[in-house]
Image 1 (cartoon, rainbow, N blue to C red):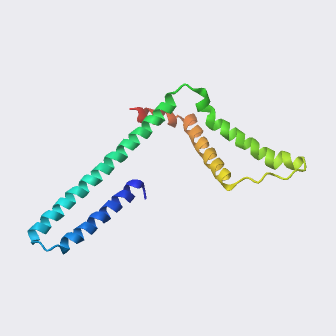
Image 2: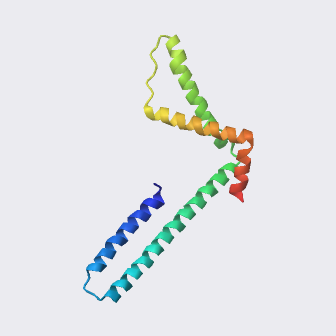
Image 3: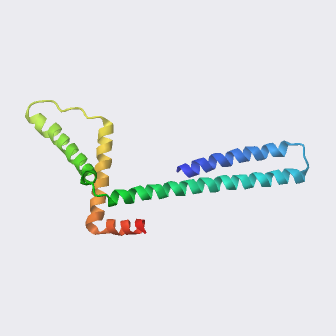
Amino acid sequence: MNVFEAVAGAIGGLFKGAESLIDELHTSPEEKAEMKLKMKKLELEAHNQISLTMQKENEVKRDVMVAELQQGDSFTKRARPMFIYAMTGLIVANYFILPLLKMPPIELPEQMWNLMTIAFSVYAIGRTFEKTGVAGKLTKKIMG
């Protein structure tokens, strides 16, 4: 479930509760119907506002991605590969060099393994896209 669905569900629940309160009021059926109609309009406005907010958030994320792709800073472009090289070096040192030196391997936390797995996966997929030309096509679609 994404954030939009969660918030929309919560808002829907609030309006359902308000609708049941309207039913309990000591007013005419016409007044109850009018109040329910106003509640439905408010609910639709809330859903529209959430949708617009999510759309703007996606636009900002897209703009950040485009800016990252267009920047000339070579350190930023090499930061992910450098992280992967460092982690690969750590694994080699930990499980190949330290045992040769008769030293126990350093215990790596589970979060580090998770981060390394994600980084390796994203980097491998990204490089595959770059080498097959898919990345250029995606960039062109994103940019316009």
